Length: 420
Image 1 (cartoon, rainbow, N blue to C red):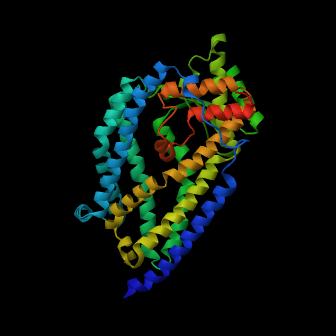
Image 2 (image 1 turned 90 degrees about the vertical axis):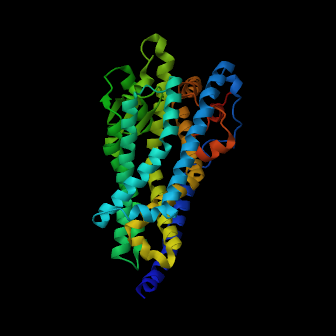
Image 3 (image 1 turned 90 degrees about the horizontal axis):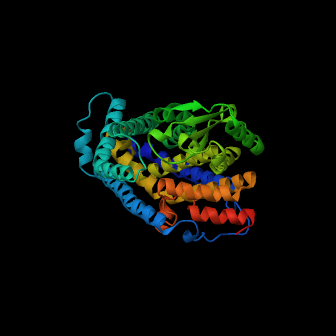
């Protein structure tokens, strides 16, 4: 008789937590996301023929089309495996074989479910890596690649286990009010993760070293002062041992902010012949400094915390009167399947917000550097270095595109700086 008694207040509180999370998410998105980052309304993407040769477009298509379908297929397999393990009798068979105290069984279940998903997608991921190597986009040896895959799996196991153990502690200790307590704890874990990830996780994959004193470092620091962003240091990441991709980012908060530049971006920047490459690098840095200026990482973290409240509220409504099952580690596969489905279904929302934020960062970089030629050359080089489709299918860009396409960014650049 206790379960219905406990479930009724939990069900009502689930509605409240869901409402609070949804209102917070909408309020943050409405006030902090730049819905009109540049004047004059929507722009038409620049014509690809004006910026890429037929040979370049053919090479991009030869790589990007198979890569797109390999990665989407891997995602589909991962979702199917998660649902099979979470919503069929396989869940009972799997969890019945777990041993030890219940927190340990949670970790075991997370490890097994995620490992099965990773193994199931491994042939597709190997094919994708071979494809990248064949086109010269990846420089990783197979042992290094497998090490990264293993590290990614371990990071996933640790993060998911912490979240699910916290959830089950709440359902066990506070059965009547668990949605409130779990919502607050999981939102707090999202906030904590935003600070911990750059310190504990990023160093597992990338080694950083200070950029030597010189004109380029001086220009980067001067750019930060122009944008009003305090930068503690300028670091170089050893990305070239894995990839040919070009990137930079700003990590840390407040007095610990650092600009990190991929060493691939430094290639060809020396001497008079490297003048345009240096301008391109400064355009990238200006973009990332604009993110820091607007605290975009904190905004994203706040949205993630609100999303955690929504997720807990929805979970409470889904389990309803059967919430007692949520106290058992046997629920782990179902929870992981629900998380996988939820993450997939919310991608369009997440990426729509991301594209707006990225556009504002582009506009900020353009207004700081006033260098249209470098910005356009950078977009071309980014696509060519990663063989990234400048005109992806609309469905793919809507669902998976975290940034505007290069041709959209070029069109915005011409709008902002008033030329065409």
